[in-house]
Amino acid sequence: MALDTRTARKPSMTRTFWGSTLGKKTVMAVSGLIMLGYLVAHMFGNLKIFFGPEEFNAYGHWLRTMGAPVLHYSWALWLVRVLLLAAVVGHAVSAYQLSRRDIRARPTGYVHKRPRASYATRTMRWGGIILALFIVWHILDLTTGHAHPGGFQEGHPYQNVVDTFSTWYGNTVYIAAVTAMGLHVRHGFWSAAQTLGAGNAARDRALKAVADLLALALTAGFVSVPVAVMTGVVS
Image (cartoon, rainbow, N blue to C red; front, side, top):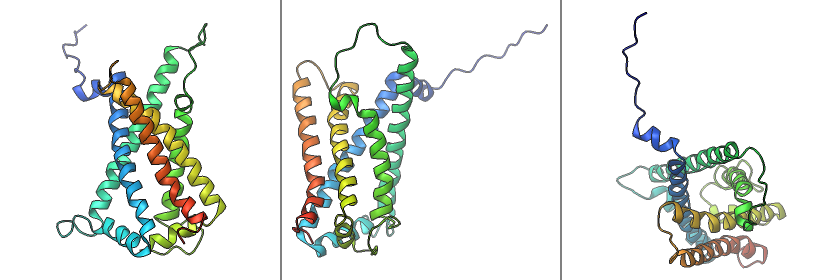
């Protein structure tokens, strides 16, 4: 019988990195920070609604013309969307695979109960699912207009936002999702810092304080818009 002299292929560095637990956690951390940066920018953009329809509609127009004249209309916006989509997919896939790996590592329950985790930690998985569903609804509502409650007006984001938050279900869905986002950010920021090596015993308290402040600021900033519409501050 002839011996097979072919040598086995060595796995590539990229494949080895992605296959490791540390690699998946790093992908989760980096993709999470990309999405966090977007959330901060998006919140500040949303707050422009308090300066009136002209200011807010001009901001919506700028999103499609940024990068001009080097980039064509909406090119920069689509580049941002592609980056965000990649971050969302990488975050979701790595989270799912880490969860499955954790279940396989301990198929039976613990004999002794683990210390009770924080509410944010225990709801990270469901929070992620809620946010994923919300993103789909949010795009169909305020980007494509397919789920918009009023007559969707392309190029008039101010009126579209007012239409959405003039309905009880628009406010309920949005505020519930933003609350889930705040809890997700609170735990995710601290976890990302640990994964990327920024945390240690001396900095943990400061990192947790930053995570709390970020979560609170983002939640308050996003919730302020539907509240302003409900109370007539924005109309």
